[in-house]
Amino acid sequence: MSAPPSQRGVAVVTGGSAGIGRAVVRELAARGWDVAVLARGREGLAGAVADVAAAGRRGLGVVCDVAHREHVDAAATRVEAELGPVQVWVNNAMASVFSPFWDTDPDDFERATAVTYLGQVHGTRAALARMRPRDRGHVVQIGSALAFRGIPLQAAYCGAKHAVVGFTESVITELRHEGSRVQVSMVHLPGMNTTQFGWVRTTLPQHPQPVAPIYQPEACAKVVAEVVDHPRRRTWVGESTVYTVLGSWVAPWFVDRYLARTGVDGQLTDQPRSSMRGDYLDAPVAGDAGARGVFDDRSWSWSPQVWLQQRRHAVDAAGTAALALGAVTAAVGAATARRRRRTSAAARARRWLGR
Image (cartoon, rainbow, N blue to C red; front, side, top):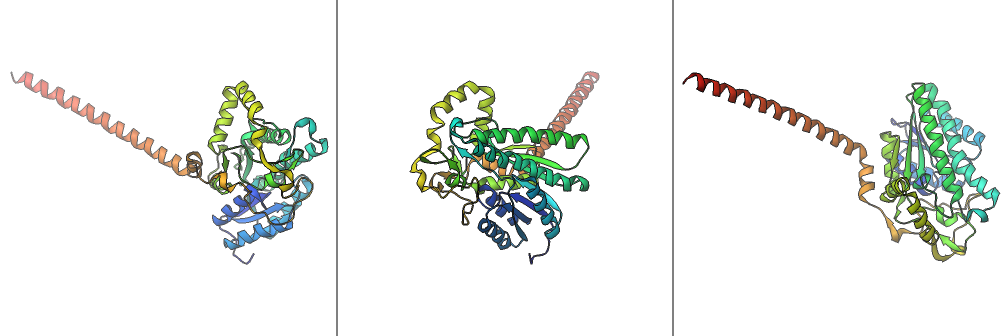
């Protein structure tokens, strides 16, 4: 807090103490943002704030359970009182249960839904309550490939992420209707090597794992930061996300059959459930887990699609410049061709008159 206020502004990241949220906190701080982190675990919050300070920026950790609207609103009030007006709000907090739907305790299902879906609703409400009167700001929803395609063992999470898309699309249209300059973006991520899989609640005997291919959270966090800097309505991150979304649109029957065959075993390791770090559904797991999970040896830090998304604004600008250059070149070529035709016609006329 000893650093001067950022010229970029204040960003809030929910669920920013671990996993992809922690990677986003680090990336935003590295890009010059002051960052407030909302999460339940005090040790993880302290670690995230230390990361922000190490980047030379002001950080603030607020203990908050995003499933409770009043907690989120109180956290937003504190952030603005201590750091300043919130310019960016990243809704990232989530919870999941790995279990067949019929084996999932109804209370667990409702808790995962409250955190993953209502947490984004509450965060959006708190952000817009402050951004709309100022007519500026940017809300970023962290989505998933599973917002477009439900998979086995994660009915609560998939349903919540689907709901976030519908809710967000409604909010976007309402903001446009009133002519607001507040921006809303959705960033849909692939399976990542995050802490989630070491402390998710599960009824299965094996340690869960992300759907392959697995991406490192830092690579995806760079895309989120790019969207923060250059708002876009929707961004798909990772080749697997693109294939999942398009496959579900083009051949949902094929995806159903494929997931029925591979979707369960593909999300389970050969390690026992007892090797997991803990269970975070109802209370935070002790300690500072950082951003990464235990799948470093199988995770991608780079892919062509992710590389392009990290530089989407520059790629778009280069493409626009190339199109403009092509149009100018074509226009010059057409003008030159017309002059040549006129010159050729005049020369033929002179030759004919000189005969």
